Image (tube, rainbow over all chains, first blue to last red):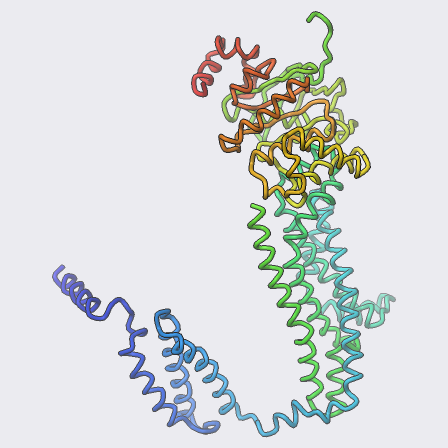
Length: 332
Length: 247
């Protein structure tokens, strides 16, 4: 009782004096810490350390910087410039540590990774690969979307036997890794007398795999539409397929488009797995030219091409998501 | 009134169970052409379930239902054909949010009745005029007030030129100042001789427009009669109790 009162009054006095800021957000803590960081920074080893003490020093340094950044960034009342320094400082410290201590030969960077002379004659190969990737992606998108939609509509009829088999289908193709499916279709099915060329095998595997995901997305979209909508449609004399086509699906599609776009982006990325069955798509061509030129520049180019194609798509999908949120809100 | 009137709806010993809950306990009623029958009763009495069973939005558990002489509990009956002759107005309007008012109205005539688009549009505009919303033809449901949405919903039901219309508490989701505009539309319909089955507690409307009142309690019809007679002189103690609460 006695000590409790004393403790309370101690905190009270402390708070009256310094406000309610916790210790790690206070300048009394952060300022000395900054000095300490600079001091420690001077004594950091300049290259990959040879002994354990060097590593301990580096880790301590990073830890202290983290503490400082947390102290600054968690307090919204700190000035903007300081918070900006904290954010950039964090990125800089990690980048710089990697640059300094990974032991990489940075002097070789541009010559190996960004060497234009190594792209001579490689462009046409890579573009052929891109064409194949896009062809595979588009055909698979079409098939998996149509198949997934059909499965979702069939499931909405709630026929227990049909639903049982559809759930098995969906669970199976969602659970099996795409790369396993690819290898199975291309290397194992020929033993049964079904020999597909890599292109068809890739389309089959990717479409089956993604149709299961698409079916789930469509199902959740259909189920998000209120039962009362079906009742209203049926009460007007519409048959159940008409109700689905004219009332449920048009509304479900708006809900479904953002997650569906996300799936399609993932599908486009996953086409790179077809490399393993020797389909000459973008990644395969990149690896081939890398071996031919004995230089990884073509592979870096491939990565950049993927980014160039996919970044706008991911932006587009998050734009759709924001827009659909607005739509859903206005429909309430 | 001695002449034989056409029976529009007849239910014989209608029962409905939800799992082990006995919601309708043997309802037998006859509803004649041109009647406006109000169904009142405490909540949970099975009023909505009764309406929904008659056009089989809910499957009745046992009993017979005849719509214009057709036994609709028989498995061979074309329920879509029957439903297209019965308008249904819901408590929560249930307009299609992705379609404009006029598109809501002409959807069923075009796709069920196979009426040409142009003609259906013409008819739809006439109906919108009838419910006082000719200027809202191209508004989406979320741009309309509750009362306006419910009037569009009534126009949508009328567009099928149904032989009868069911109203399931059409005004209970509405703000007080919007109730009047919906009731006016319903009153006009009643005056035109439409057969109507109305679950509602709008006593003013029932007094003015209803030709008969059924009182439902605990899944049974406990009393029926002319509105004035029933309101002024209820016989059954449960009716008295219920009326004393809402009058």
